[in-house]
Image 1 (tube, one colour):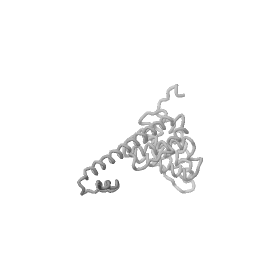
Image 2 (cartoon, helix red, strand yellow; image 1 turned 30 degrees about the vertical axis):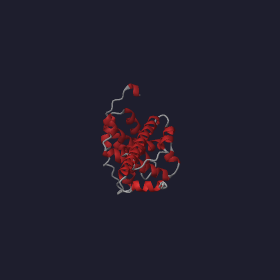
Image 3 (tube, one colour; image 1 turned 90 degrees about the horizontal axis):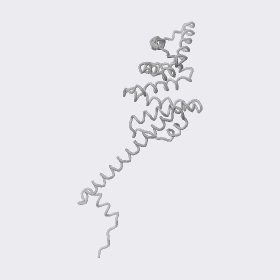
Image 4 (cartoon, helix red, strand yellow; image 1 turned 45 degrees about the vertical axis):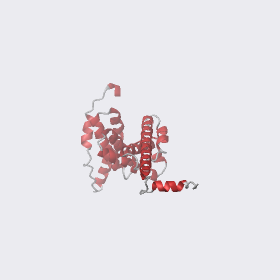
Length: 224
């Protein structure tokens, strides 16, 4: 009796495209593809669940939100929406827990590149609710540098205009405070530079339009 051929030889025969058993190779390929697709779908679902949990914790428990978000490894294999939301939430968590200012200049640079992922995505996909928050944190990251605080006014202005359109009182109050502070600083610097004969034009910013809209808001007694 002939000895049984080694298993590795049988496997090689099955994998050989010209072999009569090649349909098994197709079945194996299909099975592997299904397993990979299933794993990808499972990861996507798990990632979204984690992002949702982190977002729910963000306002009252930002440290817990950061603990969920920091270990996540999100890359180009994930959907653009998941990448953008992760970038926005991680920036929020780092800002709220003072990690952006506490650690290093490199951490500020990391946060700046991170929030740009969110801004770029939500600008292209017309998601105003996410975009106004992304602009706000982009401005807050720019703000600590004396040389860059003017750059902070631009995204904060964009955020504030969206907020005013949405009539979101919480974000109007939250956004207008740093915006007014940086505008005052910018106008003061503008006046100083004019006195030195160095004109610094801030007229391109929608200052007057935003101030007019803020002034026109009716304040209810419950807000006082």
